[in-house]
Image (cartoon, rainbow, N blue to C red; front, side):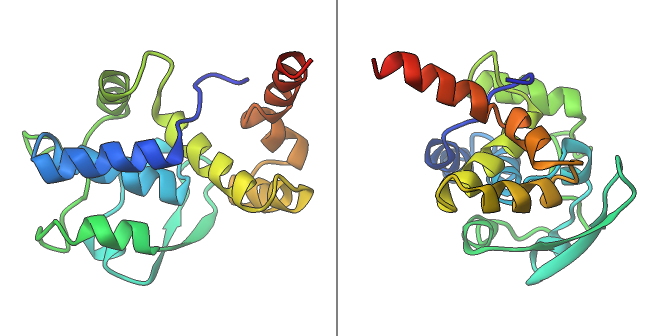
Length: 175
């Protein structure tokens, strides 16, 4: 598998909700939920405002590719957004000092709340794994994800998500 691991979608959602509801770190809880539901790279994720999330959909220009990407705000995001009353122009993911998180801060906090193999890419990979599972682990899912992630081929997406290695591991465990 390439780099960081993915998270269990339901457990990550529960962790994000807990951080919001307890007041332990609400904005980071929001980041977790939004991250696993949109599948963005961390730089693109950190550029999101409350105005963006209050719409049905919004468009970003991806920093890495320069391509426009339309994103839908789903019910999972709407549910956690209801806990926030910040002005629309505010960036969503700000530290307690009111500055936008850096990717290094995001990585440190993910390691704190999950484990040492977790990084900002884990949120994107969690999104990918959720789509892969929801679409029956199909080639169609890989085609969709390859397009969403702007990968040059589904084989790169498969490798990115660590799917081949997981299948090989399952072979050994099922003997």
